[in-house]
Image (tube, rainbow, N blue to C red):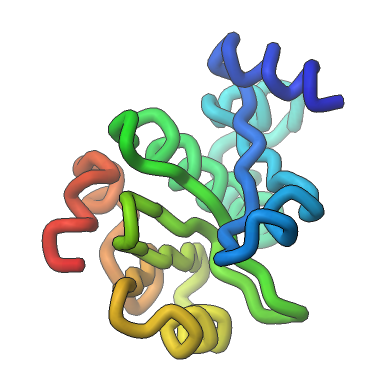
Length: 157
């Protein structure tokens, strides 16, 4: 499976994001989070029109999260790692890592009040070397976020 992930990654189709953890053993023991690098791979076979895709909140949420992940992967500098974080039921969609600096990014595609328990838990655990961003509802507008390269979000970290 790892070989196929490498091939798909090298072809610019899919990235296998590793879990962020202070422990190398925990990192290796975790399954990668798959993220498409071009959301056309998700939408081409869906049968949805744009309006239908937006109306299906679950599909739209996955699409928006994948678009953010693809943008981060496609714009990250060679010294930046794009990862995810999970601890039990608490998770953060993406973690940018450059050396000891961390940026936790949670993506919300609905106008409902954002659940930030995962971000809060991450910030408690990695205090001092990290900052958090909310993209979408109650945070940085998606269209604005997608105009900036991944390195932008370290400037205030």
